[in-house]
Image (cartoon, rainbow, N blue to C red; front, side, top):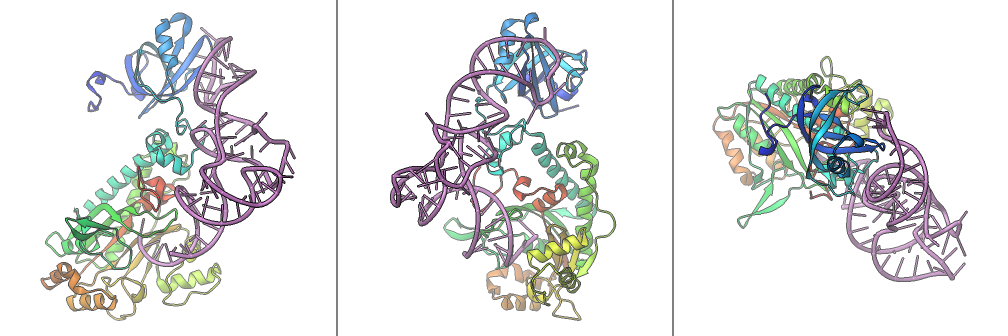
Length: 443
RNA sequence: GCCCGGGUGGUGUAGUGGCCCAUCAUACAACCCUGUCACGGUUGUGACGCGGGUUCAAAUCCCGCCUCGGGCGCCA
């Protein structure tokens, strides 16, 4: 049974997909299109479940009814009451012969974009008119799938004995010092929007809760302008006490795979709406784990770069792409040089120049960054100083390492990048209802 | 932060100095049409981002501004 969620006058509303031949129903939704053939006309009504055809035979129906039904503009909200009949000539095999039509909310005739999809709209136009944009089945499908992805991720974290947590988004200090933060005023004090739950999730991993995850917003003030960056993004974070980096990699891999499996299993209609049902593939087998050294060797071997990479270089975007094409599936890059990973990542015990940091890559881009954390107080303080950060500013964080901080590891996964790569979207903004980027602050 | 490319009716486009009081599609308005499913047909409505400059002549070239997108850096 569906829970009634309509206004009182529409409690008895039937969804279009449930309108069965022989029944008298009231359907409600948006006017998708009207095709007036002269003596007969068809109105296509759309709701969240699909579309249904409403037939108007002018000679056989009340003039007022015909006038109301055919005089309404596209995308107006109407309700239609009438008998449902089987009709092979109708698009869905059934159609409604109306006895009553009510215009619930009329729409202006000039629409800022065309929800029927006959004319394309640029992403910018679409985002400025997101409500109308979401009336297109293929756009709606992205967010239904995004919801399923988050559900599947939550479930898999629970299977890994994690507790869901929520950490503050208004903070006094940054996390890693590196990226730009959005400054705000907090009752007259300087504060920032948090760029990552990193420090907080570590503090909770060190509590009795041990294994935690969070799906929440992060804010980065970098002025980048690319199809894979946002200034407000959703981070899917894991942190586990008594874990090392290899277990964190296992969890990351399990999450990504379970997301693909859930989409394949539960989103058939949405994949179909997006036109990718046939080529959609769930990753199989273990994700290859390349060391940083192997990664730069393979990139160099592709010959894609003008200059060969040497040990200690960060991987340029072009190199990432070349490697992604070469590997052809999700893969990890492990054993990064300590110098290019943040201070809170632990180095290997037997080689201090190598860190336990890892990235999980989709062939198109980086998805996950993680590692085993430095839980030893003295080493942590050293790390702060080496990175040019004042440990005193992070005392709320560092002091907890003095009271029994277990070894722990974790990762952060880019939520929008996950949606984007699962669905093959061209632009990360398509994976967010109301994206925040360099030039977009509203809607 | 550095670099590159765009902005033409409501929407998406054609147009690189005169052939443009601007093309096509869709939308909108009106009329015709009884089985459409991107319905079809006829007629009509509606636009060169803003400001300045060059030129006999500017949608087209130059400068500034606004705005959108992309590449790199950095990252999720």
